[in-house]
Image 1 (tube, rainbow, N blue to C red):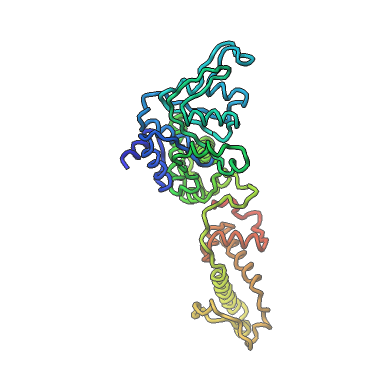
Image 2 (cartoon, rainbow, N blue to C red):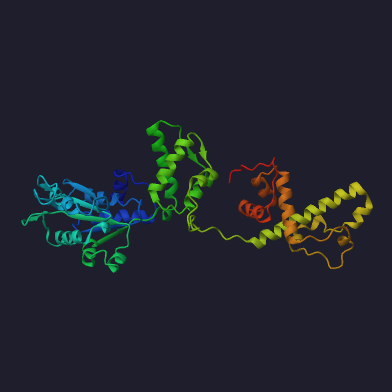
Length: 397
């Protein structure tokens, strides 16, 4: 565990999620053993840190470490880049050139996006892994190299093997040890930690006023899918640090910064707590009848005893029984005064009245109705309630 902390400090790795700690432990343990390692994980999840850990904690730490992005090198030149070429071996080869495998002799090569290698290059790589031998492009002289290979991919290599795009024998040579890097949305409490770190780094680098995150904004970050993983989080936090310098980031601001218009509705991956709509419906009933009791009392004061006699509502003292209250079959004239409203009408009236009383403030209205803000938003949309021009619509969610 001490080596794990050293690795985190050395490479500025933020987070304490079990999946992340497990991946770092595997990297530290395999580092002294000269085996090939395959690092898997989504794009942007931080796979590039793990070959550095393996190199730094292994016996080759004083030799060269070379990182190669296989997807960024054209297919026509990838063999020359990796294995070198002789003068005149192809058009433009005006001098001989060493490849990465010769340059990194005794050290470590990190092959990122290894699934992008052409099949012919995969065959050359397999020979290096099996025998340590390779040929320069345009040469017939076999050369030896002593290197450790760490590969990484965001592709399911077994599916690539099944499609004939990746050699099965190479897959098994590369994956002697597999390290799975967790996706950001699986790292829970690490997300706010990373956000605060990125915000602080941006503020320090560009001398801007620091930003902070409300608890609601942090919960929104933890619920988001983060398809771009740590890279996407860093980009969004830096945008907020620039345009909201000195402010506290609210949930509303955070949600406006997140691309939620994916084809899949699963942008928010963390499960929401189960909501008992039946319980909230009964609470709304309770509120409606309590309000009608107040109306009856007002009518009594304004119209005298006649109106009071006509208004037959449950006693306010029996509030607890109102949850299960049903209008009596034989009422003493209530239908003559006012038709019993439907459940939808009662809910609509109660929600609209609460919003009017609070000037359109959704948070206060929800508290008065004793329901969640999410339910209140749903009811406003469901019933098409118009808050009016003077309503307070820019409410922090």
